[in-house]
Length: 424
Image 1 (cartoon, rainbow, N blue to C red):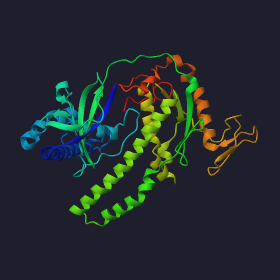
Image 2: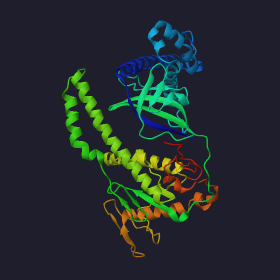
Image 3: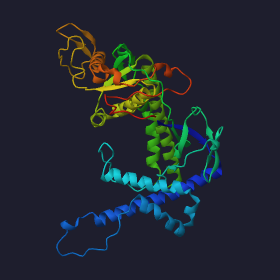
Image 4: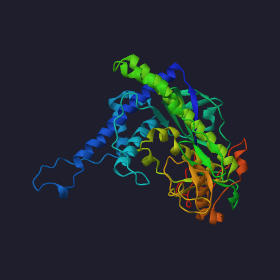
């Protein structure tokens, strides 16, 4: 299993200057290799049988790929000796990023989703350096981490690395409020598994904008609206940025202040999502939620409210924490969950502004979101995963209460691990 721990760095002045210089060199190399691929693509993307019968064909060049561009780094170091200061594997990681972003544009990812045309990195837009070499045990000494050609850097160890985890890579990132390092950890141990789960602890959740979520048991979590509460302060800072002269130091300072405020809002939202997911998984073994098209919903008139709620990030965090704890999340079909009666199943049409469910057939009367949450839970109970729970690998939920490393195993959402996220 792979997971990532992020720690804040306390860099010295010389270490910050070194990493800043390396980021600028990596940015230039990224732009050059990306331009090299664009030039080849524009000159050679036309097939021979699609060209005119009489035309001048220039000398064809080999298509630049990861290995050819990596071999060409030797020439870059000869022409620009400053590239010799960067660790060789860190420089090769820049080529790997170009390869990945170019393939995402032309071929798409594993799910077939293609990204937009890659863009060149402007100054200050290349913010991270990766050290792909595995971090040995003697490289981590208490609060100090040894990085190649930099030396020992001080970390704020807010949580210890669990025993048995191996540090595979380290990525140093510059954010608006300081420097961070992300350690990619690997653990090959297999947790103790149990063959079944408790269907009685299955709960459905209905995400909303009036309340953040409502569970099938009637529990309600209020929506915090972090962005809307910070809008007044953000408006003042954004106005300050727009009034500064482009390219000036005062404008750069104002942009930095705006970025810090936006990061503060994002951190509050993420912290709320983690705490809410932890509270749900502490009470229930199975969490059912709607399989929403969040990107499509974010294009409606409710875009700001939906983006502020962060449904996508919350569902991802929920599925990851459930998989790490050996619990289960299930995504069900959202069609009709608010319209169908949770008691008799009769469809009771109602518009969006109607927030109360009254069934004329059976007399069921309860909140609209509560009714939807019950329907979601019932649809999950008929899910093939729960019907054949012997095929599900789940570990004991006591791992959530253990202060030691969490037990892992289990699956993510859906029946055949289709939405499983490896780890946070």
